[in-house]
Length: 316
Image 1 (cartoon, rainbow, N blue to C red):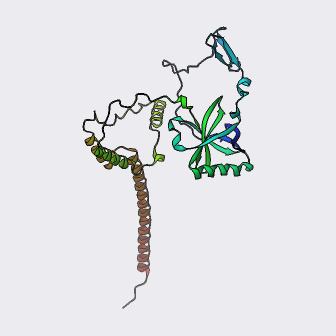
Image 2: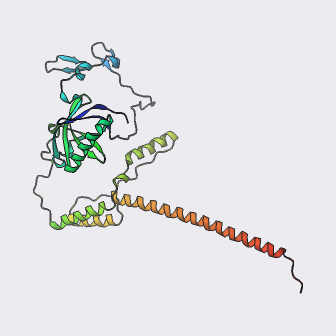
C-alpha cells in the first residue's frame, strides 16, 4: 500500500513517527457520460469566463470570493504553509470511551503504520494502553487540504485513525422521530426481540455481497455480447400498512425460521450449499474409487479364469 500522509503521533512528551494508509476502498463499475445517439464520450472542459477559452489544468488555482464580489487567489504555497499545528502532527487531545463518540461523526479510516523500528515500542505502548482502557484517543489532523477531527482506536494489532465530522457538521435530528406518544406493549417488545435473535442466528457479515454491482456487470456483459440483458426479478413481497403489529411480528418470526429472505438465512444457505458440494465431491470420489476397485476385481477374476483354463487337465 502507498502511504497517503507522513508525520507523527504525539501524546504528552511521547512522539511516534507514523504514516497513514487508506484502510478502505469502494468497489463500483465506472460509468461515463456518453452521447445517447452514438455512444461517443462527453468531456467536461474548463473555460475562463473572461477570456472565453479553455484553460489547462496547470493554470488553475483555488480562490475565495468575498461577499462584496472581490476574489482572492490562493496558491499551493499558501495552502501548504497554513500556520496550524496539526499539519504534520497527530496530537492527542484526550482519551474518551467509545460510547462518547456518535457513529454519525465517523468518516474515513486509515491504518497507522510506523516509519522506522525505533517507533515500534511507543506504538505498541499506545496500542496496549488503548486496549486495556477500552478507550479511544481524540486527535486533530490536517489531511487533504483541511483540518479534521479524528480518533485513534485499535483494530486487531493495528492502530486506526478514523477521521470525524466536526460536531457542528452533524445535523440536528429535529422532529424526524414520531411526534405522538406511542406505547409499546411488553409482549410486542418480546416478540421483536425474538425476531431479532432469529434473524441474527448464524449471521456472517463477511458473506454479504454488493448485489447492485454484480447485477450491473451482468447488464454490461450482456450489452457487450449483443444479447438482451437480464431484467428485474420483481420486488420482494412486503407487508402493507401494519394494522396488527403482533401478528406481523409472529409471521416474521415464522418466515425467518422457515428460511425467509434474511442476511442470516442467506449465510446459512451459503454454508449448506458449501457443505452439500463437499459431500457430493466426496461421494463422486468414493464412487470413482469403488469403480476402480470393481474393475480391478473383475480383471483379477478374468486373469484367474484364464489361468485355470490354460492348466492341463489331469487324466483319471
